[in-house]
Length: 168
Image (cartoon, rainbow, N blue to C red):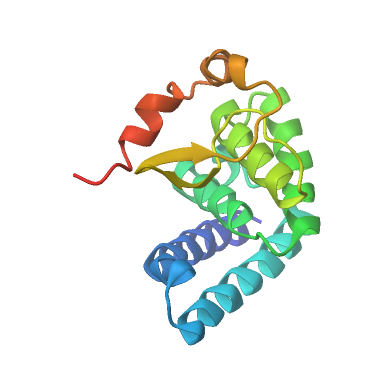
C-alpha cells in the first residue's frame, strides 16, 4: 500500500504540472488550444474520480502537501464535471472537519462549484471579469460580509487578492 500511495503522490504532482503548463490554453483565442485544455482537465477529472473512489480525499498525511494541493487543483479545474467537483467538495469537507485539509482550499472549491452550478458564491474567490480594469467577482451570497468570511478561512481581503492579478 505504501508504494501505491507514493506512486499516487507522483501521479498527482505530474497531473498538476501538466495542468499548470497547459492552463494558458484555457482562455486562448485558438479553439484547438481550448479543446486541448478541456480534454486535459476532463481526463484529470476522470482520474481524480477514480482516486477518490479508491482512497477518499488525498490528504497531506497520505500523499504529502504538494500532491494534496495537486488534487485540489485538479478538482478546481474539473469545471465541466460537476459530479467530480461535488464529490471532491464533500470529501474535502470531511477532511477539513477531521483537520486533514485546509479550509482555504475548501473555500475556493466551494465557490468554484457554486459558480459552476449557477449559484452565488460565498467567498468571492471566482472572478467573473473586469470592469474598468478591475476584477469583479461572480455574484456573492453576502457581498457585504465577503471579507469577513474570507478571513475566517484564511483568505486575504478581496482587494489584496485581486491586486495580485492587476496588470503592472
